[in-house]
Image (cartoon, rainbow, N blue to C red):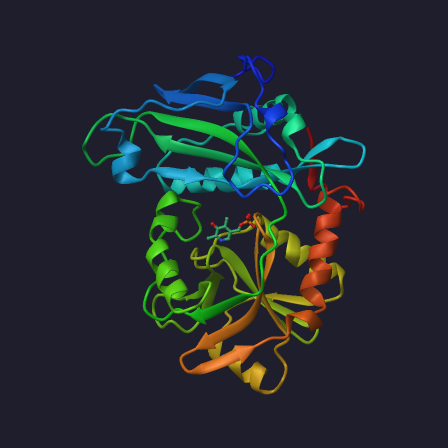
Length: 354
Ligand SMILES: *Cc1c(COP(=O)(O)O)cnc(C)c1O
């Protein structure tokens, strides 16, 4: 067990902050001065430390590179008008991280390292949280296997790390999407509910094919029949019909349990919508659309919060949406952003003070 307050810190000799403007920086390219590292050796976590952001030196036989025991998380921290820093729902990401770890036969990471380590790291690099509206600090915890053995088996050693990346507003322009009927993202019994590196690796070709056809992403469907909606790219998906909001349920383990998804469900219920988590078939959505009863389709995720869908194509049938007239998604996003940035009361205990 690690004493929460004894994480050794080696500070950088020279902060990069002074020569780095934090306004409108592109997503995920710039990193703060420090990072957190911990090693899992002989069945326990050790060597926990915060040190200057730097390269890793790894053996060519590093297990993670070959067999993909690698998982990650994505979280955001914000600074309010008074300059206080808050992390948005980090305990939800911590529990999801350990669910991912379990499925990948990796060790769980304790609260003292994941949460307290994150808090201390952000506290040290707090000045890196941009002060501008809609800017935030993106937090990337991750873990990978580190055995130096070419043999297919669960690694005995692992590295857990947290790196931080200041990020500007991630305006996602309304997207064009088609319903994917060839490729599959996740099947029952697989790792759809896991934030595993391999899930992303498997999606790159599909995204590239979508782009080639002039689309931004695909709407993933079930592996058996390609009839039921799963997710949009790497976002959870919502459909608004009148006063009801539909989103695929988590029962089959094929969908990532998004923290933004959960926040969106809570907020939309507060806005007076009836939220149904259930199977959502494409045919049903087309039926609603033809009757003029499908108003909004959008994706949710930490990076962009929401991405409106302006066009959704299924076989030869194209559904288009006039995003400017939407009510539910923009209002939900506004409410969520106000809570995260400290302009509205945090009635759900979503903010964790750094
Ligand atoms: C991370 C992720 C999401 C969104 O989860 P958030 O916790 O809201 O950021 C949705 N789908 C997939 C596949 C993801 O990897």
